[in-house]
Image (cartoon, rainbow, N blue to C red; front, side, top):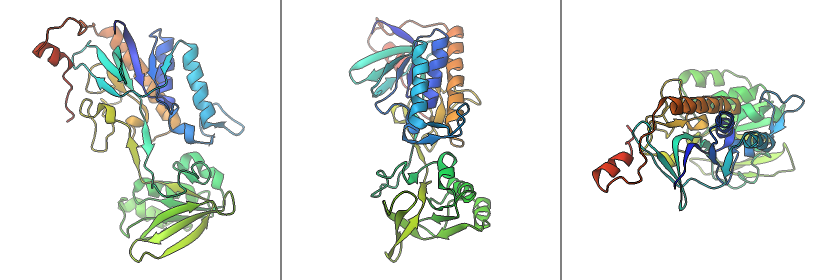
Length: 338
């Protein structure tokens, strides 16, 4: 525990790897605790056609993440391919933070949180097996693959309506399935979706399973009426799940401020959290856009914010040698979420 890092980045994906690249180029020698499933949600994506710089068919999601990781490593980033299990954050400006990886303790003057968000899943048979091969979670990413096919979308909020309208530009028909007759979506979004000729609403139904069918673009969605229990099979080109996201903020819950949905709060357009020296980027803070390019941009912001903090904030003494009792406890007392 003798060494104190300049910056520890928790998480990977476009935000984490971009933050690593920028802090590495600033000679801050970052340490990235990237998790076992490094690379974030793009590891689950086949082709990425809307990330700048990759014409002629785009680039596979895992390949893009590998390139980002290699670029950060070329400038001196170090990686731990394991999970951060807990944190102990100082609330004093210039204080030292602890990040625990199992029994190992890593200390740093700044921490960048980039744990991302996971798509909420339906948890039905076939969903995982057909992920990336008929079942998707991002219309912006994958809609073009289903051009002129029947597309199913599951959800009832504004995001589902927005994605349905986007999918309607590509699919021959979009069938929106929701478990209730009422929707959480705002009235204006619902009216816009209903006004589109090739969007069909199917309520109150739930998806019981996804089946392979006769091959690509001939998948089967098994639907069940939520009231009568009657089932039917629909042949579809593909399905999109739009039932929300779950920010992966559990490790800092109760220490760093989060909103009602678990997204980490940041100060204005910066990446500063309520804890001095702790910054957050990517889908962990983003309710709205959730794109690889916006996550990468916020990773850049977090790196610059961390660099400026290190430049401008004097370091306080480390906890080593502090007396037992109130002083040591106060140094490390986590700040409760508001």
